[in-house]
Length: 506
Picture 1 (cartoon, rainbow, N blue to C red):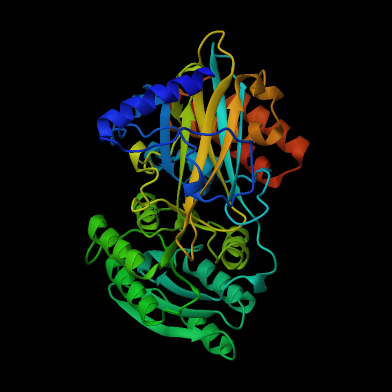
Picture 2: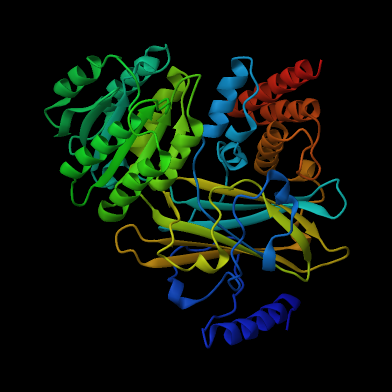
């Protein structure tokens, strides 16, 4: 029997005693990726549930060893934190540490993970050793199958909730949204539907749910006539937006609210918990998801992220025409459909080879280990063509060899709500000797994570972290080798942060 199998057997006996006969099965081995379609009832693949991790700990607490060698989190495809950081740096300011979410930096870059043949996920686990003694960086990569032709997806019923408060008059806010929505209107299918709600000090439905077929001119007129006024009653906008979405609910369609705002609520109900409960209720009852689009140099990042998390959606941030067109005209129409609901990941690190570990980011997405297979506990919603990456700092026991970790993703079918799981494994001998010798996509992942770490902490927490100058040079070299525009932008942002931090010290 392998060492990690002996460990799981011991844990199984303890769990049986404590739970009074609760039957749990030990995990089976698996390849780096597989067919993505196995039912959860067929096997148990993640190790055994452990006590919940404490929430709300200080930033320095993420140095601690997580209990029982299990790490569980809800999937998240948000990217707003990275794009907002780039905008802030371009304006000559360092982003506030609280606005920097490392997982959103990492998930902002394309990955070359193997895609599953069918619905669901593939699981890829890889890693590399760092210059810090016994510390490695381990990457868990999850990917869904890309969409085929746009005609293969269900029709969409999209309710656009547009902030028209006075702050949206700033160039690059409402004007950007209008231009992008106009182009998107021409690209949606005839059997898609849209509604438009505006809000300032009050909210108003200016267009009820309307089919695109034969009505594009009317929709264009509504968009072009939007104008700014008064203050920001975000609560009224959210409430009216969801009421309009429910009134126009279409069976068999993807029903989604698209909130476009700088999220600077200053009028009416500004209590985040009240707003979140409204969104959560509509999600549970009607399955309406939320897509948050942040705009503006001053931006309520934390509120928008919480709204999207509670609304089973995700957030992006746009600061220019190219980004806005990509979001509204490419990503939103292409990813209207859902591949997975309430998706969670659990990584079981082998205690025979792993001394300690910590998950990078996902602070607001942690899930109690014992809730991994409780499908009543909220996870994340993921569409076709998405990738999700989680990075771990892992301290390997000196001289240890063999099984290192098993990663399991669990999700519900969007239509039937049937649970499915898929797994991937990593052995110590599969770790690259250094980050620099790992494949390019891994290096990009680590570079983005190092950058986020440097923005959050004066004393970086990630093992092997270089200074910002060296990191900028490495990113620039990666960009030259890959000829990737997004990596060039990453290198520029790192170099800008380096200069701003040097100026602050002077």
